[in-house]
Length: 197
Image 1 (cartoon, rainbow, N blue to C red):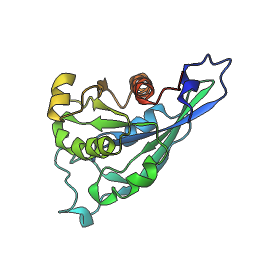
Image 2 (tube, rainbow, N blue to C red):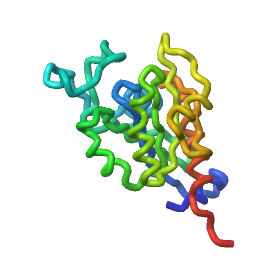
Image 3 (cartoon, rainbow, N blue to C red):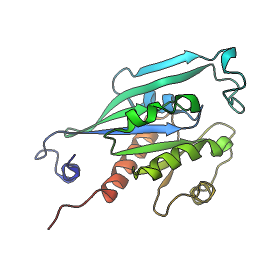
Image 4 (cartoon, one colour):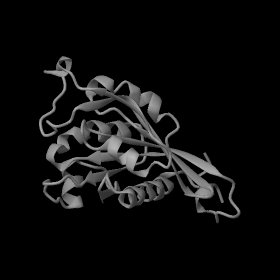
């Protein structure tokens, strides 16, 4: 993908598309985020939680959750006339992580959605994207009743590489999610190879 298209004026640039992953722990709000921003009815692959997950799925802190994503969520948003983002929400449970390699193919970047009440659940996604050199940022989802955490403290707790953005997010609010996606695209641009002079 030629990232130079992002910097052109919408009138002069040919249409560009970009694939973005939405990752994070079980119950972090990935499906909610995709649903809040998608301009099309999002594709969801949710199934009811059953007693078969007892002892396998850690639902502490998300006891009221009744469904889980088993393959992916998919949504689309047109950011400008010349830029459309395709969003792929990854499954959060470890037993479905094998899907991540297929979903990440061709992605320009990722959002790691973090829940400060279960911050350790973000380590797997952070490690995945760092290991594969996929640009990502951490979006700290605002849950009712969760403590407000300083972004710098989150970066330290997750042992993020220098320069990895940490931004606040309310996965239920379209404008908040849009701000996260804009931040990610800008971050991905800074990490992309620059054309030779």
